[in-house]
Length: 355
Ligand code: GTP
Image (cartoon, rainbow, N blue to C red):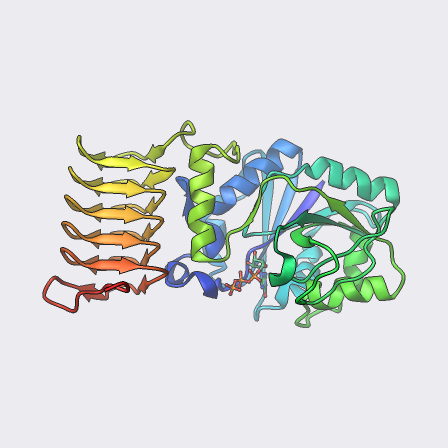
């Protein structure tokens, strides 16, 4: 089976992490986020994947080349971003599948433990045009929802509402009959969620829903990105791409965790990163060459490449961009994002949201 991987988004909600690196390539539990998806696809028997690229397109081929995790890889880039539907149509020019073959489409920012083989079986048994993975969420009011009938047929794509009719949402993994992709207009900006799926349903095409609530996470926000990394390190979602055993922490080559430092809760300590004695790092992502000085506390945060946290500083739910420096004793909390190169020395303003 072939797949298309949608990886062309700008990842604006994850800035400043996505300034230098597109979201699907952000290091997550020690490897590029996509490595987890590629390894799962390889294990599933996907033979070939076409990357639909746009933002920082060249970085994907540089990262994965022509083969990874037993899967042959090809790359198709959009000159201007075409949206999710337009990207699928554009990338389909590189597919080799026949008209009735199933083609898997994956959003490049989803961690999912669902049974893709079962989703493909449902698609083939039903003779569907498209079969979507739907997951159930406790509070669907933040999402558009996707109701199905008793046979599992999708009956509508509904926008966000205060009282949604179902808790099933689109989980960002689709099986398309190859020929169904050609119903998407060529060379135009198209949203698969807002245009293609509602259009197919309105035209009477058979669109099925594979409802399965296994582990599922959209890592599009900073909080979710940190959670995804943490869950992989802790083993809440198994990934064949993990570079070490699951546990409280994943410490990569050349990293130094001093005796007397506490590093736990699914934290990743990147290559060459340092955690000094008396520091505490919980549930966080330290990218390569990040530095946490003695007595500092870092919780549920991301330190990008070369970011530095001074002695005794506290970070809770914070994103530091590449090379950002937080001086001694500063307190940063609650979704604060420090852009690359912004310096917060001890003599500057003391940052504290609960002061
Ligand atoms: P935000 O800007 O933070 O909303 O992130 P995003 O740009 O990644 O958008 P979104 O999360 O809605 O995208 C879902 C998936 O589709 C991601 O894997 C994106 O990389 C991908 N995607 C979104 N828009 C495009 C596009 O225009 N072209 C391509 N090739 N992929 C896209």
